[in-house]
Length: 217
Length: 217
Image 1 (cartoon, helix red, strand yellow):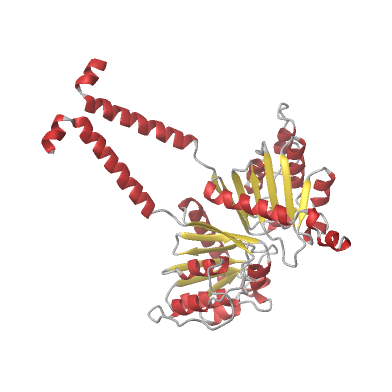
Image 2 (tube, rainbow over the protein chains, first blue to last red; image 1 turned 90 degrees about the horizontal axis):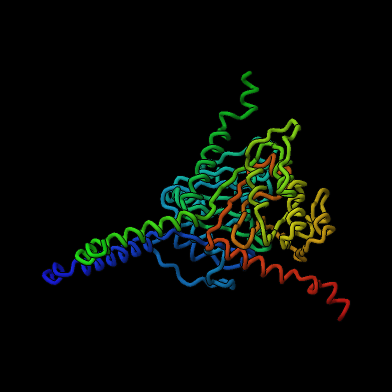
């Protein structure tokens, strides 16, 4: 075969080029970033199995007997992406009152994921807010002191997956509103959001609270 | 040269392959989609030049004497992308009260761009809403009749550029809130939003108004 190749260098080159292209396609396929669009309202669905599996990956949970549907839906997909965090989770959320999402975030914190939350000072005190529960669990939360709203609604999973859109993390928004979420791993979109998070995180440093400064003036 | 090529087919093949790759790279570069992230609040800036230029592309506007800064900012970039529409503009907006964005949309309509607007029934009646002005100008507007909010905040320019994020189209949000916008031409993200717009557009068809149905029952 090598002898045949030596007589027909064109054939060998063409074969090598084809092999190269096939390998490139394979690598590109394996590295293909997550690109997903979810629309809401999402129908109510049972998330017990997802949360139980995330809490105890070694135990296979039995079938849930509750009357809710148990299939895939926009909300379960959001929850699944969130629960995929292994190292870090940055949350920048105007309103956060969904009990299931609150439970998922506390679960990630207990699993050793570094969770940081930025939120809006006015909305974090509303009835049903999850922010108190997150702080109680030892999760770092920072909030604005500004007249405008901290109106972002995004999450960054393991510094590589961005979840962003119109959806506030409330049951009302998930079940009743028309909303969208983009889930993306394109670095061109993720990187600016990471930088924005770090910027806001520093601006909202509690050492920079204005009442603190005033007391010390 | 052809004689030399005939003697060395491998060289010719390699040269052709290199030429093919170079052409491919050139095409890919020319087709590179817009991928931009904008963060708000945007500093107040004069948008007269942008709007005047869009209204009369043949007239070069003189320098604006107003005291506002005239440079580039997040808001002017949003406005510029919006004004790039040539054929169609789909808007799906929870709240729309920014006078500059309202003027830009009416201007596109007058220029012959097919503008369609979907909005939230409760928010379209708020003080300062641009929806009345858009309808008065002859732009098609449809709204929800649902208990939940029509909470999307996206625009699609010429069916190929998606503008979406947390930003409602209000001066308050633009100048005072922390907000984000993604501007993207990736078909994987644009297409689902186009389909969602068409779906909502049909659901909100005025022939399907519930009071209309009741009167006729």
